[in-house]
Image 1 (tube, rainbow, N blue to C red):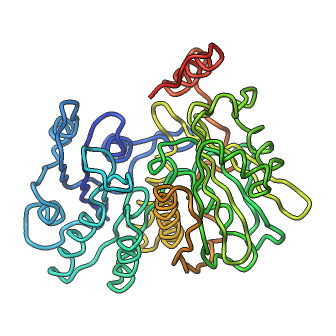
Image 2 (image 1 turned 90 degrees about the vertical axis):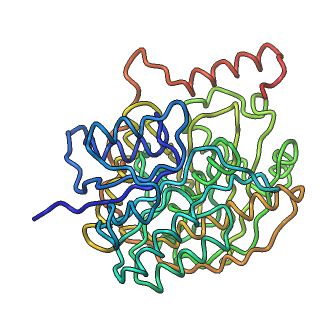
Length: 410
């Protein structure tokens, strides 16, 4: 039985861009739970849109004998008419692209998706598609992408690594959990790039509540002193914040003193659930979660391996491979659709000065009972002794500057 093939279409390919931590693993192999593992799909072709000075895509393509084509259609056809691969990987992350008036980076995710789907329509053959991170900077594009994939019967998998990464403790709400009334994620920015990760991490937890997901009514984005004022006014729970903060390695730091430009997304779900997502630049380089369940509070660190080999991407690769092998995504595309809408409307609220925005996010779905091959229940890969990640080193410098009373970095 031959191994399925994929066309990888990326915006930019350098260390450690998403193209590197996904495509390179598919070429070189990867470790799964510490064991060397052979990829279950083979990279047949590449499309690379931009070639910066630090590009490694051309060298790696030459090393593995993978052709680079000038268009997405040619990559999917592997140089011939039609669809001559078993799956398509779209990585529209990184590279030099314009920003719109809202401050959103105009990554060509819908354009990449349209090019792939158009090629399939012309050939009359449809294969699974993976879209890295959120679906688009604009929710209307995201909704169209999901609707189009469903209409054409294209298996569609997408999203962040946060829902798949390690958790300490190994917290997962049982499917149909009762009594979930408020939830929270603490993370860091930038607003869109990491705000999306934090929001999908939240969504992966709260989608398991009783009644399933019914959508979001409104979102408000606050910054600066308004973040802490909202807590004093009861718009988010200090008790939950303390529980989430206690799970972070930075827990000895005073976030109010160290984070001069905090941001919070205040999310109102249609079924009454309230949630808040904090971006505390210069106070943390990690993610954590807390939720009120009846009279109890659940909390956990959501851990990424922020140094080579960036093992959390291995879990995402396993989802890509499974979708291509089975024709079904093991995780709901609706989660990514809803999370995409939340970051879009959250940015719109921010752009309008922190107004409360009602949303059209009537996304209804049921979470899967479980998602296989994640970091859940496995030991955290803490950095080896003596290794300090760049982000942690940067954080320590920021903290020291705050304590010395120096002005914020730009």
